[in-house]
Image 1 (tube, rainbow, N blue to C red):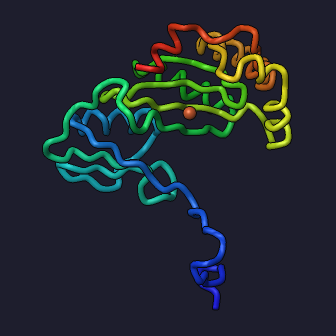
Image 2: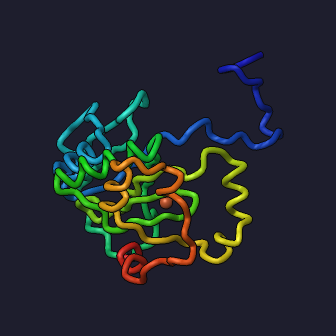
Length: 200
Ligand SMILES: [Fe+2]
């Protein structure tokens, strides 16, 4: 008997992974400020709101992010254990650059910009200090990604390389290709100040 297109499991079969990642919920002490920030950054819309809760989405999922101002919530100390960041992948470099430019014009700028080899990533901080990574995949398919994991460049520097987002945007607008602009230059390494900003 099929249920939602798959056979019913007796519980002894192989574990069934979730069908998708649905949403994250952030507790906050500044609901309205957080709501405006995520509305701006993700282009998200509010689908339901009470004085204590806001549900937001940016696609056909009913909510992708909820913000909860539960009574008694306290500020999260820097460097606390738990979730480090949320990451969102854009369809292509043009979308990432356009988002960077739009956010910069709105006064929202990244705290760190890193080419990790597998991704080109811009890290922002929301009003509560949570990190949000806006990224693209640098490789078009899994074969080229796996080849990168086996490369000397990745062995030399598996962490990442800083980049200047204004330079990236300028060169993209000048017509340089995404593959050239996202090429991993392992020898450049990652600035200690960038590491420190990410670690806070
Ligand atoms: Fe990440």
